[in-house]
Image 1 (tube, rainbow, N blue to C red):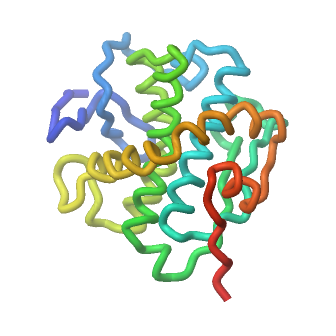
Image 2: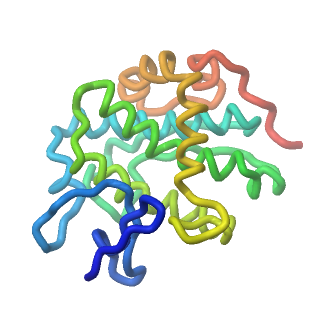
Length: 210
């Protein structure tokens, strides 16, 4: 597959069967072949679960910033870490119809991978290959954003996903000290209510829509 670059997005480096080329921003030279997250990450199971906890806390922090009620954050340790068919973690929220289609919802979707990438950097675990794995693992989040707002794309549409990532970075900067401290605690607990997450992040969980 030919590799092309559009506004910093690399098209053709990664592809999925059924969806074609998957744009990424991390330039990595990999031998041609098929990879899964375990191949790319090269981290032990504990490190990988901590990175997943950071990812979900990033989503939660951004949702809270934009006034969304968070119901819970859950890590499913019983799921095989590298099972790509089953969710291993999730944030449950309760949003109004307006919130579902808001800019904040788009930014919150991007905040998971940005929190995971920053956590790797802060812990001295970041490598270009691991950064690429973070992008690959975020495909469900990215695809959901494009479904929510078809104006979003990767270097060739009205709203560039890179702008959502930059906005997510700004939101996470305000939460980072608390969020980073939450990562091992969430992994140990396995599940927190939205109120617990909000309290640990130093904010109030907005009320659920009536």
